[in-house]
Length: 111
Image (cartoon, rainbow, N blue to C red; front, side, top):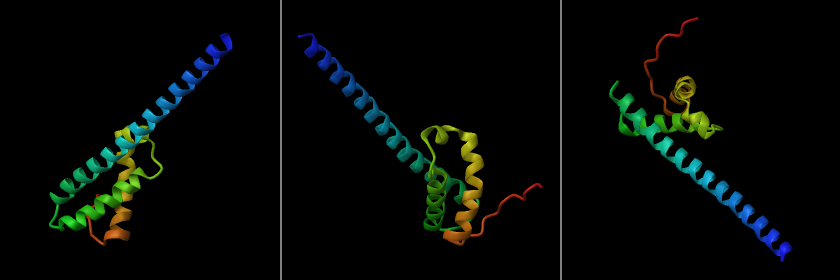
């Protein structure tokens, strides 16, 4: 009887670990999906207020930037606003050069 109880407890604890892992993966996936959507929306609005580029080109640029920022990023990385700001500038510049062919006003770099 004791052995059966120990096996049951071990299986129950294992199931709890799996449930926690599943919840964590679900949270991470949902967070990244929402982050990407919000990043693109915010980027398009911000870029659209500075010029007369088409919505399609702005969406393409901002999607490229979002994907670049999110590449290899953890949820913790994406929650760090300063890290995202510092990472997004060079990625947006690269997206402009390679993917979209837009000219964007960028501030002069200080050496």
